[in-house]
Amino acid sequence: MVTETEREEMTWFQCDECGLLFDNADDAERHESNCASEDDPSYLQ
Ligand SMILES: [Zn+2]
Image 1 (cartoon, helix red, strand yellow):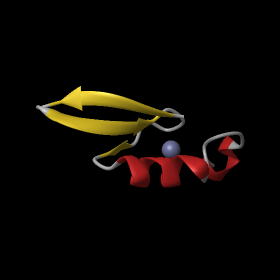
Image 2 (cartoon, helix red, strand yellow):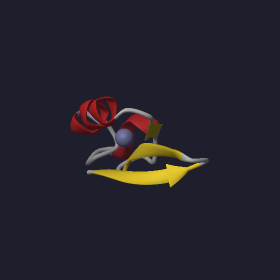
Image 3 (tube, helix red, strand yellow):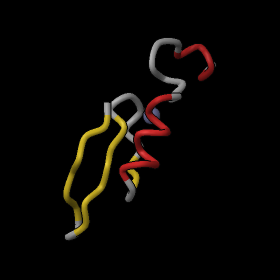
């Protein structure tokens, strides 16, 4: 899921799966819905 967080007087949206930060909720949700780290970390190898 996406967590809203405040940093440097801005609101950011963080992907709980990989920790990426977005400045836009739509971008964060779109990323999160196809975040590759969700269930198969094998792509990191
Ligand atoms: Zn992610």
